[in-house]
Amino acid sequence: MTAASGAGGTGSAADGGVAFAQKLLTLLDEGSFSTSYKYALLLALIDCCTEYAGADGLAPTSVTTRQLATKVLELYWQQSVPFEADALLRQSGSGQAEIVTLVSRYRSGRRLDPLAPLGRCRADNPDGVGRLTAEIEWKLVEMPLPRLQRFGGRHDEFIYRIGWDETVRRSHWRDAATFPNIVLFVDGAAENLLRFAPLLRPLIKRQWAAMVAKCNRLATYELEAFLFGQERVDLTPVRGPLRDLQDGECFYCADRLTGAVDVDHFLPWARYPDNGMHNLVAAHRRCNNSKRDFLAAAAHVARWAGRLSPTSTAGGDLGAIARDLRWESHPQRTLATARALYLRLPPDAKLWNAPKDFVDADLRALAAALH
Ligand SMILES: [Zn+2]
Image 1: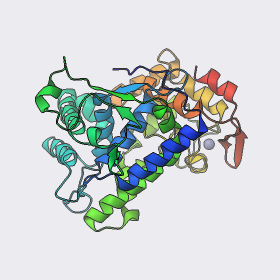
Image 2: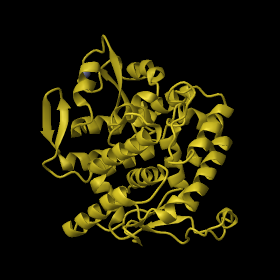
Image 3: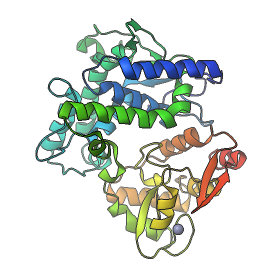
């Protein structure tokens, strides 16, 4: 399932970008939703634009409802376990959001522990995860997709167009031959989502956490890590194999790995949540702590991109590690994400090279590394 990509409009007109951003802020403020679906759908749209970027890093022209449902499942996966004692967080002003109930039921039906990674469930139970994804897809089709762009008292299709409205029936959606399962981005919108992603992601997460805090009478600061934090997936199993793959050396400084060894998300989790095997590297804690949410410099990207190819030694080894551990692995998606993040950087962007050492983005070297 690959969305068409490439001609989503350049979105280069500054005015268009500003108008788009203003509408999106209005939508976040005013859109009337009693559940967290608005936030989930917006993040899923940004994720899909990132993940299905073309070879040139341009946003796709459309995504399918199934692709969106896959991302929405990933978002709710770690949120559908008890927060305290046995209580699920409520994600609705009245009762519980149905998607949370669906995911929670699936998890308890398979007696999954709270840290169980979704990637492993996909490997162990593809049919079950497929059915769950389909149920979530229907929820998106029925509710937030036709309603998201209604705000400020009117309907304004400034992000996407779809071929159905709120009166859609489940029987129609189930008929794959006639249901138009495409979410078509309006000109420039997908590119704008990518451009503004570094600002939109933290804003949407903050508002999502605030909404859940309100529904549950909790403090927002307690919730953001629970809802979105990377520490919710246990990376311990991959640490040893990654260290061996790197001959016991830190990915960034190439010094011997001694003392505390971290597993780092090469493409930072805050920029795009990717726990795929090919996005993980072993590094010194001091290197990892210094890199934080920064993008790494071109020299690192070139070495890292070499690990993405299934025909390279490292790429083959990473694939084998993922199979052994039943770890999620999608090098093509990880590469598309890297292109979406790196190939639209301005030339004066600063990239992390080493502790206390930032360098200008070498756009030519980046393009060559990610070609
Ligand atoms: Zn190091």
